[in-house]
Length: 138
Image (cartoon, rainbow, N blue to C red; front, side, top):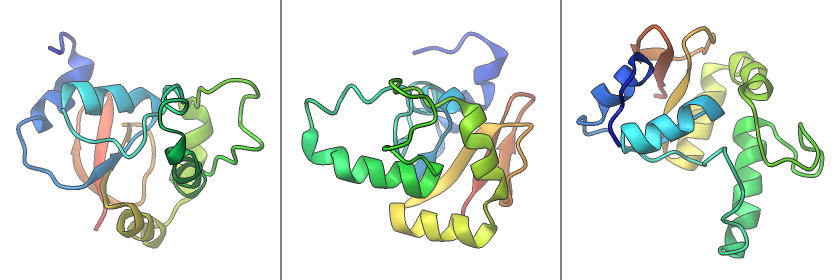
């Protein structure tokens, strides 16, 4: 997968870096992290279509959605839709304290948070461009 626009620059840059742990992503950053950077996202936010093939993951996946994204699967942001748009994630991520992020990072072996650059995340900035920012959890 070769990026061909400026919005993928930051993801191309980190693709060659030896970075450990999962990346906590948003809908707008999940594909870029997995396809451009070739780095592991904690969860893929585009779809739950893997569940029929791996039903043993359902409980773990739903716990991650609650812990990280504050999404209650019994009361989803958009009923009858597996999509979780960034607008539902933004507030949850911005109000979270550094200590909260550190706890989540330890629990899920996640070391990075990747968001649109305009978001205000209470972590140390690792890298940013005009479109996206990557924060380090430590």
